[in-house]
Length: 176
Image (tube, rainbow, N blue to C red; front, side, top):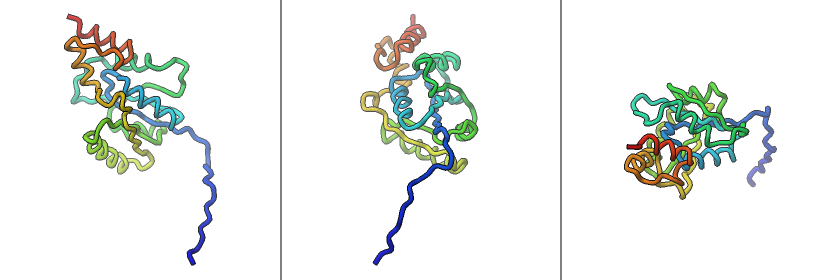
């Protein structure tokens, strides 16, 4: 007869905030990004949206513009969201900020391989920080910042794909 196992309820030693870091270039922020942030807030107590400085990418919007556009997406009284920027290893940033997770949105299987490699490397560097993958909502699965910029560059309508203030910023950038 197999030995019966008894399980005691999990009791957390200390009460601590569950903080997640959500990185990206956010050039610009899209409704898909906002969906991931809002869904992350259902899992975590606080989400830090981090503009990752990537020297190999040329951004359309300045860092300051992107920070402001992101801040304008969320109510000023929403204390569970903060916006920051970082260069260097994101996993180091997350650890220093007390985050237990890095949130990544996945649109398609093609996103997974690269994100999986990053997650494994981050886990090797810092075991205290997990990577959490969230599937992009079906409503936003086809959009990316690159596609949004391309549509705006050619005079297309980006309304409904990005917040209204971002749509206006795109119009201003590509006015001829």
